[in-house]
Image 1: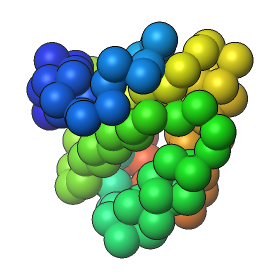
Image 2: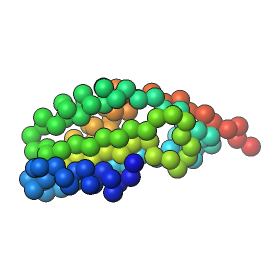
Image 3: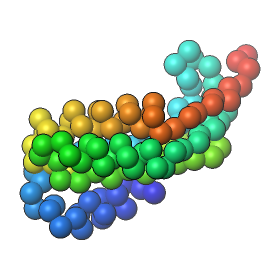
Image 4: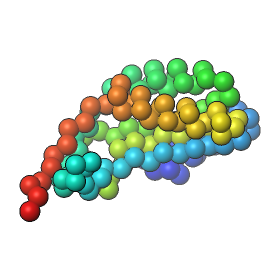
Length: 121
C-alpha cells in the first residue's frame, strides 16, 4: 500500500466534493526505538474487524466524508510501512482531531506489536 493508492480510493468516494481537506498519515518502522536501541524488526498482528469498527465509528463524526485505513502485519523491518491512514473532511478543524484519534485507537485497539532489538555495541 502507498499514499497514491490511498488517495485513489479517497478520490473516488461519491462525496469527495464535500471535502475541503484530506490528511494522510504514513507510519514507518523506526531504526531506533524510543529508548535508543537498534530495532531489528517489528512483529505486527492486526485485528481488521476492530480496525473497521473504529473507522465506522469515526466516520459518524460531524464533517467527516471518508476514512481510509491500511494496517500492515507480519515481520516488518525498519523503513517499512506499518500504517496508512487518511481522513477526508469538510475543514481542518474537523479532520485533524479525527486523524489523531484514529491513529491512537488503531494502535491501542486493533494492533499488537512486538519489537525485536539488536544488542547495542
